[in-house]
Amino acid sequence: MKNTLSLASMALVCAVVSAHAASSTLLVYDTLSKPFSLVNEIAPIQMSLTHFDTNVETLAASKVSAADLQKAHFIVLAGISGFPKLKPELLTLLEQSQKPVMAVGAAASFASEKPLPSGKASTPLEKTKVAYRGREWTLRLDPFYGESYPGARPLIGTSSKSAQPLAWRLSNRFAFAALPSDSPLSMVFSDVLIDFYGVSHEGPSVMVFVIEDFNPSCSPATLRRAVDYFEHQKTPFVVTTQMRELPPGVEITPREEFLDALRYAQAHGGRIFLHGGNGPERTEVFRKEGIRIEGSEDTSSGNVGIELGSAFVQRIPGEPPVPFTSAVPLRLEGGGLLIPANVHAGLDGAANDELKSSIRDISSFRGGVAVVVVPAWMRFQDMLAALEAARSTSLPIIDPVTRFSPPKS
Image 1: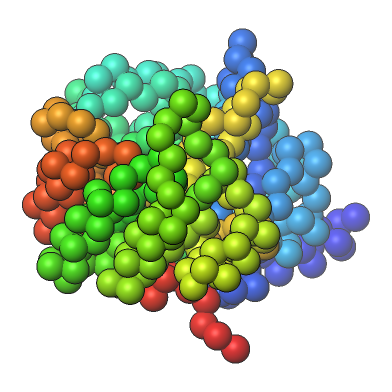
Image 2 (image 1 turned 180 degrees about the vertical axis):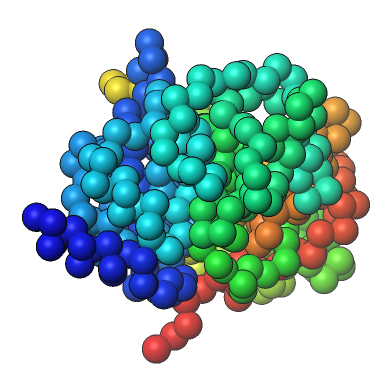
């Protein structure tokens, strides 16, 4: 056993680590939920990792072996209710490792010169200000395990009296002193992971315009006016469409008028995506009418290509999954890419102020994609107000098909 551990220790210490397509990440945790809670706190961490091109294995600390530590390129150590109880010899291996280690929550003390479990209790912060990349949020951090360690470089600070950092780095060790359960904290955590993985090719933040769920209960004239607006502004856009899930008791647009409006959008630069509630077989129905389906929204596309919509995580056993808000694209298991529908248009000035604030939040993150979703049932005047509010943020507007489609072999 000692010889095996010795060899594993040499491999951990001597490994040269860099992010690449074949990399693997080991996510080690103590428990799934905080004390007296059923809420899964590991699921949001797992979802954040899907932005990166890495294979993730998740293990409880009691199940981890020396071989698991040896084969992983990156290690995430998550303390949900306490420091993960690794076997002493494995903790020693991890201390000696030169591989990147991200210590989250109660495990944050690992990112220190003496990384033995400190047993430090959480000290929640009420209404503390967190400033990051030009944006500032007032948040409640509970639990919170921030502490100033000698030699550590703060990455994100807080406005607490003792100026405790939210995130810091010490050599190959990174720390995030809270649990990234919900936005904006989950989005901040995802951005810190860019440094953890050593990613250098994240592009500038951009915006995507989506007219959502154009169906036979919507006005073809309104869609045409929106298309004319996009063409006048030389702005790319997406229209998501479907024929099946229609509100009861509404007036149905004649089939040919409905299809003509989609053809008009396509002829003037629009990308047509299949809306949720439809299987891939519906693509053929539109294709026969001269309409190309180039992506999907909230519906299975075989997990290849581009999908718009929300990622969902199972937070409480037996209850429906809940949306996970992301500022960046997430990788699907089958190889496709999920572009998060993360900014939603409303019907009044307050909603548009919130829309602008959401876009500015997303634009502060590296590689952020603000997907502005405008329902197709809205009046054109309301659509226009939302689109103009979004444009006022000056974020570049891109065609997601051109930007995110995988290269053709």
